[in-house]
Image 1 (cartoon, one colour):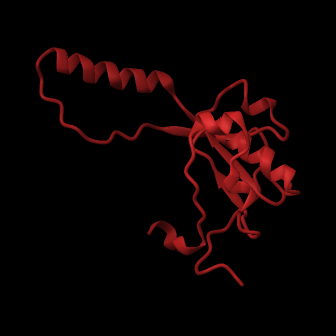
Image 2: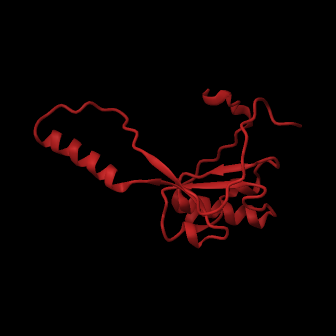
Image 3: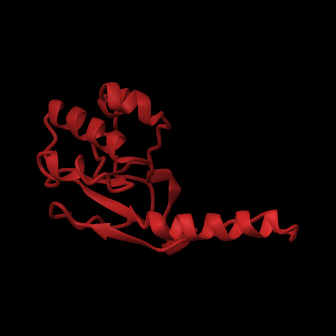
Length: 139
């Protein structure tokens, strides 16, 4: 596993962005007491996690670091504290999709696969340093 990260210390609860936008993710209510970071699949999901964590007495980013994904420009800075999020360049996504579609329309064979596009972090609020655990969480 990358960086020798022990997965036994990780906590994952899948949910949909639509559910997260409507209300706080229930997983945060039952999160382990030593939870120190949340990486959400979207900014609305991160906003829901922030709302729930704050309601349970956790301080962001002092107690729990929260990072969103997709850099919604009106949401991230509007939160308190402002959300740190991962930015994807939509122009690069569109360029890649247009190249692929153009090749398909020209009758070229396009091999299925994964394309990793560059991303950047938008630091709206200070992030607390979170170190990777190298074993099970302390009891």
